[in-house]
Length: 350
Ligand code: SAM
Ligand code: SF4
Image (tube, rainbow, N blue to C red; front, side):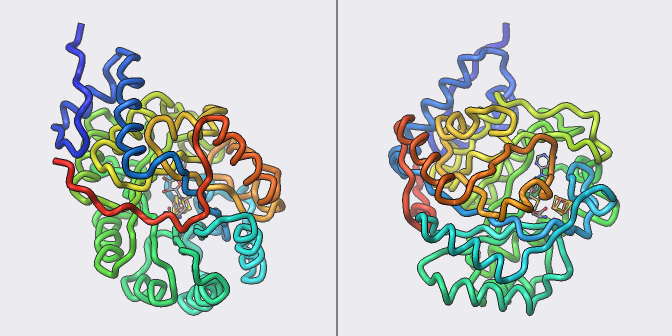
């Protein structure tokens, strides 16, 4: 019998071996112990309020060919769409009316959205909703573009590093994509002044336990303001169609571990988690997450933004989504917060 690993104290620095052991030890009790400790520190820093983000999936065009993603350019069966600025602004209006104070603009790497088109859009959103934060998640761009988007009002940027292991990055991506460029982008975003989010999928093809431990080590060193973590889920029209989905259990342990290592991080309970587990959002919050992204995209395009199979369907309008999700939160001892939801001051708990 393997020795049972100790649940770390908040802010602890763990070795790769310790991380690996916490994530993969067979004793199921560890998931609950990690979650208990993670909830405690989350509650101390953020309370039971959950930050709600309005997610606008504004383009399904992508020039990249990441092997895991249904939007990859070689997927000739993917349904492509772009929202117009008016449609995007309508999404913001819907979200604002119900209480959302952060809009996350996410999409493929779509050259149609030039620097000018993006900055015009960002300025317009900021002019209409000065009390809201805008998060971008549109992949790798030049430093000048990142700067221009920041100057136009974007304050947060989500760019998962996907894996901190070079060989694994190459396995998941086509030859023209490089981990070094991803890292360059993350450092530039940080230098410019964005709140930066990175992260990875759990159980992506080729991922070995020690790689996930290296990812945790990278997160601990980079100290992002946000961490996006969700299970890998195969998409039938990608080269990874036959691969297995990532484990919900490991994702939950990882959420708890990240909360413990980076106590004030903004940590979403992701859609991918709720796709594999109907209770995934609440289980994610119970594991230490404190953010949920709710879909504001027009219903006509939601199915077309297909990263993986079986994406949790959400046919409702913003008002219904907010009302129903708020009720679910309350039944579980949480509450939806009307706030930009910035990160709490980074505490040194060592
Ligand atoms: N194109 C931008 C980028 O790649 O950063 C933003 C959109 S991309 C779809 C957002 C995230 O979706 C990626 O960082 C990736 O981790 C995740 N994703 C893509 N395919 C996935 C899959 N099959 N299962 C789970 N997550 C996936
Ligand atoms: Fe494009 Fe992002 Fe999908 Fe890669 S993960 S193919 S960059 S949308």
